[in-house]
Amino acid sequence: MVEWTQEERVIIKEIFSKLNYEDVGPKSLCRILVVYPWTQRYFAHFGNLYNPEMILANPKIANHGVVVFRGLEMAVQNMDNIKNTYADLSKLHSEKLHVDPDNFQLLADCITIVIATKMRSAFTPEKQATWYKFLSVVVSALSKQYF
Amino acid sequence: MSLTAKDKSIVKAFWGKVSSKADDIGAEAFGRMLTVYPQTKTYFASWSDLSPGSAAVKKHGKTIMGGIAEAVAHIDDLTGGLASLSELHAFKLRVDPANFKILAHNLIVVLALFFHGDFTPEVHMAVDKFFQNVAWALSEKYR
Image 1 (cartoon, rainbow over the protein chains, first blue to last red):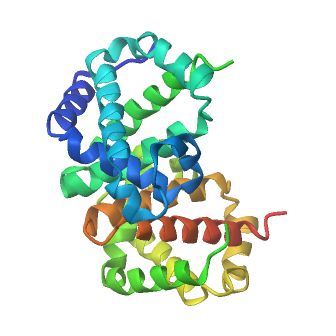
Image 2 (cartoon, one colour):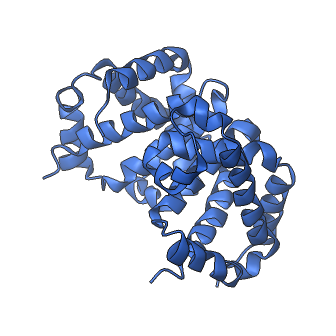
Image 3 (cartoon, chains in turn yellow, blue):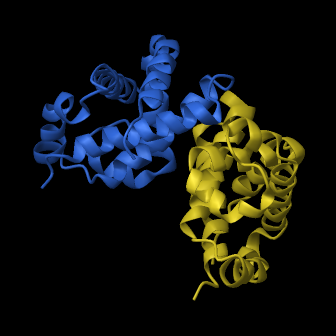
């Protein structure tokens, strides 16, 4: 069972309340596709991913970035039960999408970088630690239903 | 994933922009690593003050960035250029190489924070590859 302090809950909710999903969603997904290009294998059917400019301009990618953050919001709203909240999503990623779970950490890292560029010095070491804990729980929950 | 000519030129150009703040970057990244990944503190058990703003942390951040500067200067031959640093880490410090990735991540977070406009996905990729290659060169003498 993951234990959250009151402070950690406030930090996570506060970070999320300031996020514009239409902005950070596309930026996070584009970043993973550029920085770790092998992840493009999961988006071959999304059209033109030929170079960074095309990826940034791709509306399907942009839309999917927003989908990812709506998914993260489910964890924020159910912080005491992330594992069960993500049971179906985990099965989906394993059985239908066949995503290597190592990629979850890569996306988590890219999301962290985008948050850092937005929050800058407001993203203190303590907030980074709480954020990392939150994303680690998310990554673990998403990997839970694999095999 | 070895460095292409384009990667090297991106890294060198970006380093040109950021090197004047190297000390701050190093101190911030090292401090964050100790806070966010507390298992890394095991390597500094003898230090009395491991808090982010402490003098010891700032000093060590500067030392680390000195190593990064060396790496940039020897970007065409990282294994050769970082040979003595590799020996230090392998035989004296005996840092588990998995930690190089953790420090690299924190350096990247700080670069994104300080240089939010310049740290585009393309620069991020080149820098990520660079740090991976530096980690590889640092692990060279381990076994």
